[in-house]
Image 1 (cartoon, rainbow, N blue to C red):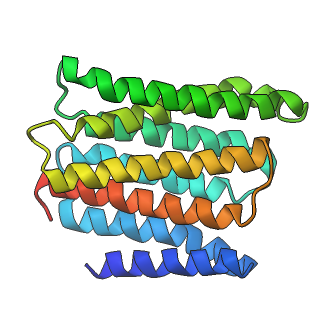
Image 2: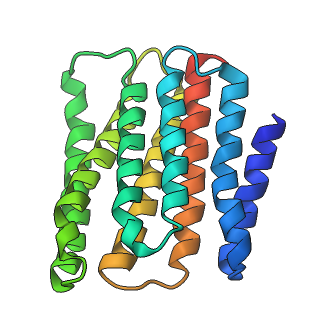
Image 3: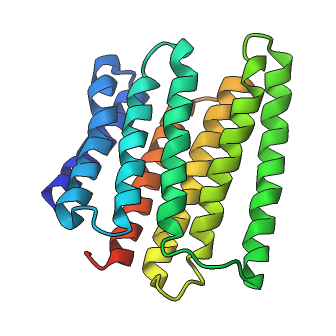
Length: 222
């Protein structure tokens, strides 16, 4: 439990550092948050069984966190790291795999509508700016994979092997992740937003805490 407390401490420190513009603190607190969350989940479970996918998702998210602190020319590399992080979350949330059911239509329709709405706004911004116009395809593909992660999390609400608490945590986490990335994309490609980095990071960290805590509950180690 100590590592979870340390992860929360660094997460809170990161939020403060962004709000007050403590540049050097951000470079320490941002990766430290996910590192200690990763350590906590490993200590509790050893990433046995289906939890290995959630562990890999954390590792790639940590890589993405670090890369995105580099100059903007490394943005695509950071996007790729988070792309694979979401792929691993999708696999973990669908372990064991279940054949598609009729009840999945409702969450699927919701996710598709959300994807179209968000991407149409972001693409308009990308097309207007020649310096980022080449990112249209990578951003579209990334949007598809995070939408797949949200859909997979929503489906846990009905799955019998997921408790209500675990399903609520991963679902909330996935939606917060989408919210975080949507703010980031809007501020970067459409129009600047006040305190954008603060809202991106607070929702991102809460998303990761929700996804991992929910997965640990599902696996029965919490």
